[in-house]
Image (tube, rainbow, N blue to C red):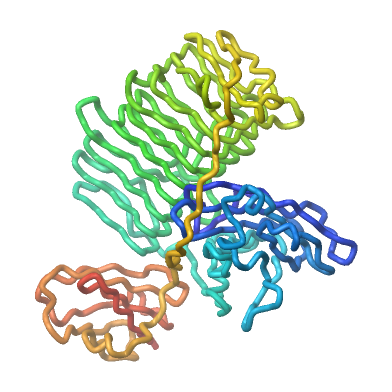
Length: 535
């Protein structure tokens, strides 16, 4: 299923396109359709393409970014046409100078690897269509997480096992804890006490089965550019945040992946919840907010849930938005119960649902859209071209405004106290991609530092050794230093702290298992990594 994917790059805020799929007689005929999405970014980097192959055979392929003159199929390949990128006018020939991939004629060094069987790949292009990199996730090694397969024209396939040996995070956290560029194994429940803040930035966080993160009033959590999922595909219990009306706690989830948690995020009395550009997949409820105040839910994909987003007893007059999200493979997209959503905007979302898109009980819900501009939501009920139960509502009367493009979609709200009205115009729900192409940050696994000039600040001896060795700084470091030891698979073996002004530290690899290890030292914002041989 698409929602079992593990990707290091998650869709940022932008406009989502689904590809038109072509397969001619020469191409291997897939038993199941190949599915592809493209995301255009408003902040300028370009396009990310996600392709899912549920079949047991590999497939050669090509991608057309929308120029209709290049939209014909190619013998022996399956073709993905993203015609909307071109016809919408937001990406034109100046924006995507190269209209297809692989490019015609082929550029020097182009390597186009087939889509492997039972796999998901993420391909990254800049705003001119130049290929940047490719990540792969395969069914048979799902517990290892995504693998970086290509950077530009260089083929790489690092071994990167995210189920760490032992465990390193668990128990009570009483002070601010910031974890960056790391693999973290949560082997027991984590509890944040009053005043503590937990931050994950560009991390892979793997949870032992049944574990969770909880927070007490006064504590906050930030999750950025991070993946959270259960080890070896097991379920975990998600994030549970409790606050009080007097606290200013918050939750931020940005550009991240949360997978296989039955109840992914639960909050109570939290001041502010912000979820941007992330993927939530597989569970009962993705986001459950009780007695909520401020929240912003924008640019996300939710899939494989009974209910994607649920609120209850929300307090009136706080600004709230649910915009530009995609709710897929769900029974119910949004569920409101006894809420006062008198200042909630619900715009430009796509609902693909089995039972109802928006279900609202005893709730004060403001009008959706206005007489000038529609709300821009799209409703697609499974098994029917004329969706029912788009908005099932009991509570204060409201008006749902739709434009001419939506008139044939929103025909049967099946709702009480809901009036339907025409808006003068359809809301434009596309985000503009700018002309500049900022650099991509491509996350790499642990490796030995290639620049020998920077290694002179740290010396390891003896090397080789039997599992015990010394780390010496050439000059004292006037700050506390964190030292990570990883094995060849990228798993954390040990984390130690060096006190300020320490110059010679004795380190030991528990058990002294023979093999190659990597010792990483963070100094003044830089990381130095050296290889250690235990024999």
